[in-house]
Amino acid sequence: MKVDWIKVYIAALFEVSWVIGLKHAYDFWTWTGTVISVIISFYLMIVASRKLPVGTVYAIFVGMGTAGTVLSEILFFGEPIKVAKVLLILLLLAGVIGLKLVTDDKDKVQEGADS
Image 1 (tube, rainbow, N blue to C red):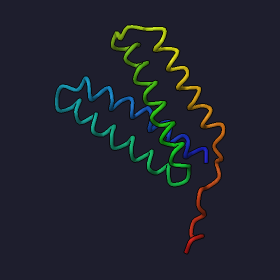
Image 2: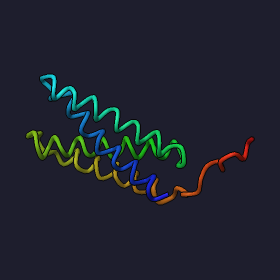
Image 3: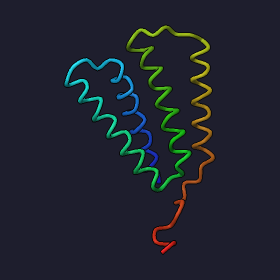
């Protein structure tokens, strides 16, 4: 199951990439990179969701993507740092970590059990 969680984390990294790309892409190559990031991001999330709880996967994917996007904008694009924004990101990450900790890593449905 650890491999599936790694897929979720990598998907979230690609989510940060394509969200930033939506704002900053300006030519064929930057738009191509953005589209490739979207495809990889959603593919990894979908594959991980086959063995992990979908709601938890989606919440972690979005939470990490949101936090990563905001932090990237601050670190790389000069977005002003606001205390409230940082505290809310920390709260969001606490929720993501909490979801991960309380999620059972067992398969949702055994292969072929319903057949």
